[in-house]
Length: 157
Image (cartoon, rainbow, N blue to C red; front, side, top):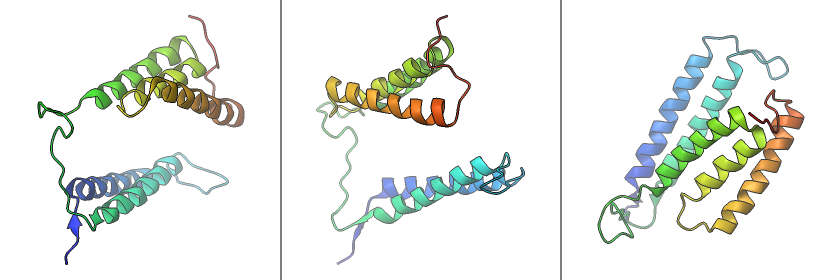
């Protein structure tokens, strides 16, 4: 019995591997440095490596024991794709840009997580609120306190 391949995951994973390898290659044009003395090429190379590994894992997990029956617009009677997730992610990014400029790190982080979480139809408003609060606390600890990012927590105007 041959295992079925989920083509979307397989091609998506392969694309992630290619983009990750491209980021590694582009990062080597700059001085990469070491872990204790990172150069400007370290971050793109490290993220490219993580992206390539993640893509490889996704492509490998595309082989499952069950046949893949992905139907466009699954769960909708009209057969159109669900755009809610994509629209919420784009709106979340726009809210982050606007609130990051005029409101600070905390409102921007809360907004991007809350709006993006509403893109998943399985999430409730309460779940999105809890996730937003937790991610905002993590952002404060990581970016404002540990990394001392030059974006203030709150900014008025």
